[in-house]
Image 1 (cartoon, rainbow, N blue to C red):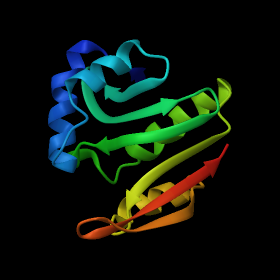
Image 2: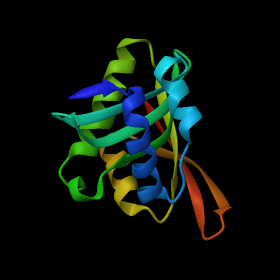
Image 3: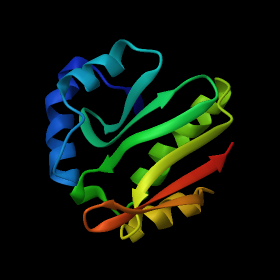
Length: 141
């Protein structure tokens, strides 16, 4: 089940971000996503268990994905694909025209998922990370 995050999710999402990225957007950013129309965050749940999460900004035309992750034990099961697909479809209904995101060039699993959903590389930021380039991907909705 897809739903917007709630306050009781924040600590678990911070743990998930730290486990996935070794960093987090932080409590205040996630808290703001609950009440903001510009910043949003969604979780994919099975009963009350969070399986994956996505945070983004949405200005009524452009979706910018900030963080997107699935718990390690649920990766490779199509949960991330469905989560992102459902969020894009929902926001398209609200007027979204395109989606952009940045991904490490070495993150082949994520890049393959994004390409499967129709994202295309539009720019490469050479040396953006200490050990990697960043790819800027776009999907026209």
